[in-house]
Image (tube, rainbow, N blue to C red; front, side):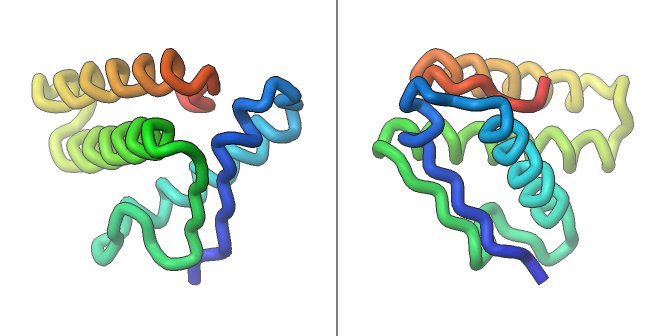
Length: 109
């Protein structure tokens, strides 16, 4: 059972970002990624609410999709496979774009 996750990108961008808010976001994303890796998983299961501007949501969705692709590729092919390295490069580009557009530091590196 997936717990309710509520990520407000506007609140995270507000400039009053605390360490506890970043830790909370990282924990929520880690939990979400764990559930996305399952065999019957989908990108955003029920109980997940992400709010923010349209551009921020697009960037967030793109990064989450790249995280999932990288995880799936890693689990299927191992760390040193060229496909995995390519997926990691795509993930890094998506994270860079997310951080640049939103001003929010992606909690996983």
